Length: 539
Ligand code: FAD
Ligand code: SIN
Image 1 (cartoon, protein in one colour):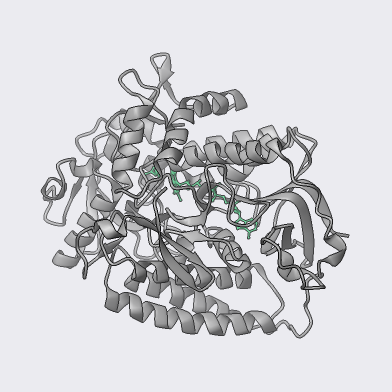
Image 2: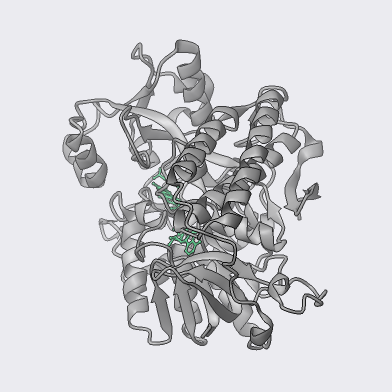
């Protein structure tokens, strides 16, 4: 029997959980999440959530900082909505039970790169976990919500899956097929489907993102025919902990540490950031990551140092307890020892293109959080605007659906069950593991912090070959989460490389050695639909 609900939410990070909470006031909600419920990028967010609530701050100043970081590509109206809503978001999160760090009766407002004011509300250095736990707790007492763990969405259900295949109307999403814990592929139908599957950092070998971040939502939406925008704008966080023997995600050293005064030094002990930007260590991330990349390449080093030695020990341990103890576990005693750091893939500014209410180009399909391209980040996301965006646009999406709820899908009998004929358990895990590593390495080497036409063309040729091989393997093999992820990763890699090759300029996070400056002719979104790519004017 297929599952049926009013709302189907894919993902249980900040965007999915907040959407589910709001939707639960309107009707029945099913949330699918591919691992344990808390496992998400949200759960690892450190620095905090930005909101103009300080004495000398204003939404206008937050707007200006966001637009400046976005390098001419932000959708101004989207940013206006987000910064205006931010103070109320903080109040609401407190009401849900998030305990933000306080000082002298108010919030302890931190500073991060690109912000002209202290406006980062945080729960020490584990803000995301505090939010994730509070949202999960709030949802656990809502009887209208069913949360299913270890359920991996495989495909969105659209007219492509009709038995009759005669329907030529506007592409519409009726729900999703998902691989559940018992190995079956079930159908989940809903009046509206909300994609909140997060980012795709796992497409790179060095990333701060946990293993769930495989771009599933972008890949599924792309296959269903949705418009995908600005995938070339991948944010590399400047300061991930350097560990040569690391397997798995890189541990992040929050930008808030630089906000609190830490400085960057090269292997000669020289502070280098003032040579690159007047804002030094607090320049936006693209500037700091490129400066570090340049230092490493010109000096032949593998890492730079983050120096906290001038900072007060009790302040460091009180403000950054997780970072200090994770460093201590590795023999780095803060603040006396310097931390070896390198850039790592961190955030995808592009995604499934939405309007101001989270609507995608597919009827009944909404997207919010990191999977979406709402227009707020433009060519570079301002620090701590992501958690905020997740809440604001999840809320707007649910309000939009509730204002005119779509009818229950009347197509259920016409939708084909998942077809497993001709597939077998080929037991070739080595192929999956090898392809994933090959893809991650080639993305890092050729589609990384600094790009060129030559490297991107080489990357695309290899990705296209891998894509064909993986698709063939996928068609013949019994589905597993690892195979679903690999197919999505290669699709997302293609979208990133294709978009990057299209944009013949350097802007924000997209640095091209062949085109070192920005060019007004490219003040546009890169939009891909099926095999078409175009430059769409900024609204
Ligand atoms: P996520 O939180 O990643 O949740 C995605 C969910 O979708 C997960 O539950 C996942 O399991 C599920 N999922 C994925 N694919 C499928 C599928 N096929 N089927 C079912 N479920 C699926 N941003 C800030 O604003 N401030 C910060 O301080 C900050 N610090 C960060 C620190 C780190 C280490 C990292 C990695 C990111 C940080 N970010 C920060 C970015 C921010 O955390 C993320 O952008 C944000 O949490 C994304 O939220 P989300 O709900 O969109 O996605
Ligand atoms: C950090 O704490 O440095 C991450 C903040 C962010 O990604 O917004």
